Length: 165
Image 1 (cartoon, rainbow, N blue to C red):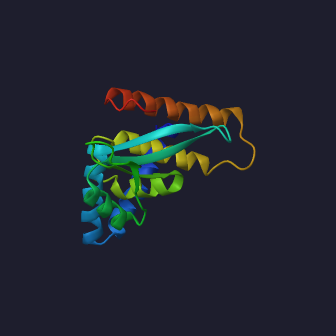
Image 2 (cartoon, rainbow, N blue to C red):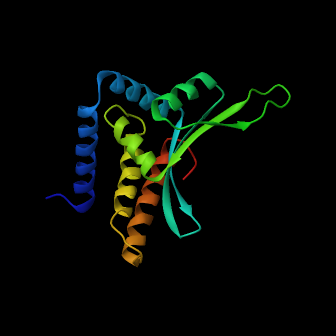
């Protein structure tokens, strides 16, 4: 018998497959390429949002190769920004990031081809799905579930050496 977490992951994988089935071949190729970038250069993290004491999902990619970020922006419709100016001999450094439902939506589209960061993507999407279930008041049980997902993400990110949680 499946527990709640297994049911949620099964549901997320089913949603991701529905996204994949609905995409054109060109979109599949674009999101498969993006999944490779996320696996290699991306970070999927859950961080504590201090303003409301809840956790948030963040997906980010940082690099010096501007054309790659331009392609990511073209695929997702989300702009990137310059993180570091060209001081001395260092290359300019750019960043692209999304959070919450937007991050979950992109991860759902990439899930079928994510490998290295598939577990992080599932946990991040699970957090966003969990957050859809609460109204105005957040119970201690809800906060405990959020914290459980945060701890699971932290453990996975430390395992693969990302360091950020």
